[in-house]
Amino acid sequence: MSALTHLECALCGKHYPARQPWNLCVDCGRPLWVRYDLKEVARQFTKPELSQRPATMWRYRELLPVDAHTDIVSLGETMTPLLEAPRLAAQFGLSNLFIKDESRLPTGSFKARGMALAVTMAKSFGLSTLAAPTAGNAGGALAAYAARAGLQAWIFMPEDSPAINQKECALAGARAFAVNGLIDDCGRLVREGASAMGWFDFSTLKEPYRIEGKKTMGLELAEQCDWVLPDWIFYPTGGGTGLLGMWKAFEELAAIGWLRGSKRPRIVACQSDGCAPIVRAWDAGERFAKRFENARTIASGLRVPQAVGDFMILDALRASDGVAVAVAESEIPGWMSLGNSEEGIAVCPETAVCLGALHRLVGQGRIGREDRVVIFNTGAVHKYPEAIGATLPRIDLREPVDWEKLARRGA
Ligand SMILES: *Cc1c(COP(=O)(O)O)cnc(C)c1O
Ligand SMILES: [Zn+2]
Image (spheres, helix red, strand yellow):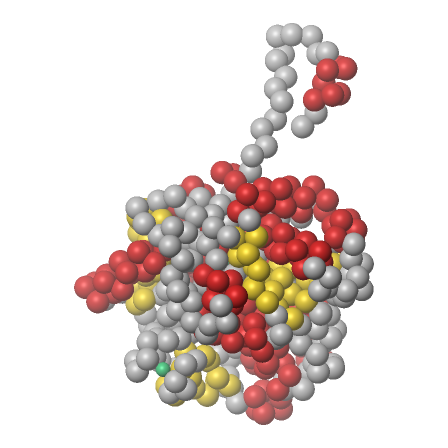
């Protein structure tokens, strides 16, 4: 049996029974945390046992709402590497910079972790039709996992979402629609459709289990760091499930006594100044974030003008002694090229924002040269052909090659 005990409203604290589907708190309309009997987890789960298990996110099942008998919906959610980035570190004057590369997960982003678990739970509850708005990658992941589970997915995304995201949803057989609005407009369609058509609302944080899947990023990071957490984590922040899942992982690992040392990382929530509701609320010292009007960014995963978990993100930043940083939209292509060209890592536009934020904080003297810094590369740059400016110089085979000219022009 999983040590899952109940769900708990993140704002008002109301409890809900586990093992049945829930959306938001019925009293206050805010998200629910998934809670476990952590004393029981501490008794059942040991590091030697963990070390014997396959390198997938399911190796942490004692800290997940599944047990040995759950029918897990999986596409092979491999552990992702924590890559040292010495060349990039030198660019920033640091000596301990790492990139946790989520780009190789199924469907090319960390959204796979959340959807693998959320779809597993939905299937176990007997739900058949899942509906979600998406800025892009969450839709691709939902479409794939719903197909894998034999469930139906209804997906609504802004019509200017990356073409790949639109095509991957269609290809995986989802009922996908391109909407002339933003993700919160798509969210309204899902809400209305859910009541008109009986879909289960699978929006970010409106079902409690996506956070739990994304929590495995933090569990993995801790294990890869031999249970001594880094000094800083830079995380591109949209709806916030990744950041929240990671923070929850650290709290739960501390509660079961697995962390060495009491230090928690300082978390940096990174956004583009084209859509920075969390940064604006952070700078104003507020607990809730206002909708960010006219949101525009090529980092499509960050184009979330209003997040239902705003206060959870802001609370986590305060608890971690972290900060929220907005980077100029115009700088994103440059940071994206730097990440890709210095290390060969498929740094996506969202993670490019993290490089800009790191540059800023190093420049302000807030990060020590020896500090251990981890940046999450949340997705594969290959999913963003529109955001890659590079075009190759052309060779015309009808003419003789001019080698000197070619040597000057190589891409
Ligand atoms: C969704 C997404 C984000 C933002 O993640 P949240 O957990 O919603 O804050 C960042 N990067 C990529 C590539 C994404 O797809
Ligand atoms: Zn509540």
